[in-house]
Image 1 (tube, rainbow, N blue to C red):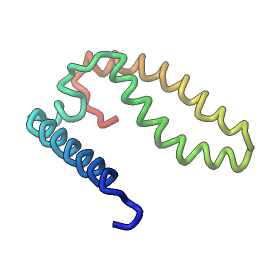
Image 2 (image 1 turned 90 degrees about the horizontal axis):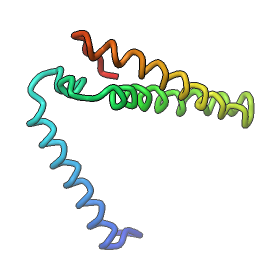
Image 3 (image 1 turned 120 degrees about the vertical axis):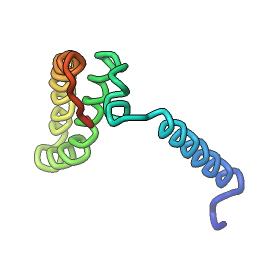
Length: 107
């Protein structure tokens, strides 16, 4: 198996097996699109805001930060920092509205 030792292979196989079992459990628990997108509206305001924040920051930090760091140097790191602050405030505000209405959104 090359440089992969038996213990490493076992850890990888167990990890994938656990992920597959978790996926099957989640698949069986989700009955509607509302269950899938917003956890059946059972998520709290903080959890919903954190979900949006992670989605926005994840995408922008990969694309935006590398571009800003190339163009601006170290100050490009402020891009993600300020975006995180803005998204946290936005997510906290908008998640309250989303929970009170019948809105569905993937992120």
